[in-house]
Length: 99
Image (cartoon, rainbow, N blue to C red; front, side, top):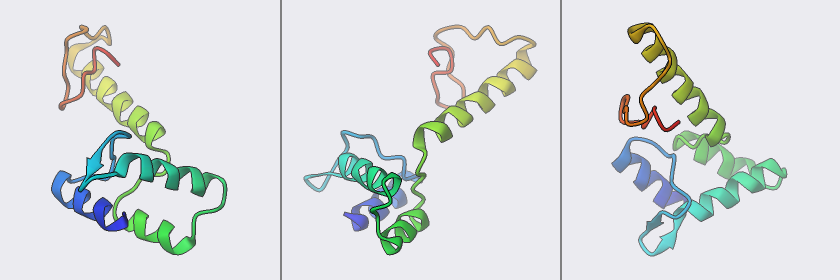
């Protein structure tokens, strides 16, 4: 499955694989979620941990996503002078108004 993570990363430019993503018939998103749980519980091998990190896997995916969204909001606020983002507004491909 590691090979599929690399394949996904090369094609998509990131390794933030959605939970329900299927790659070559395998539920890659669920597998990656399991690896995150194993790491959190101290059960992931250091070798696999290192390989996944080299493939761009972010262990705290939700905190990274929150940080990315927050930075988009700050940029919007600086540009517009407020942070009252319209619900339908999209910033850098992210639905900032819904966040």
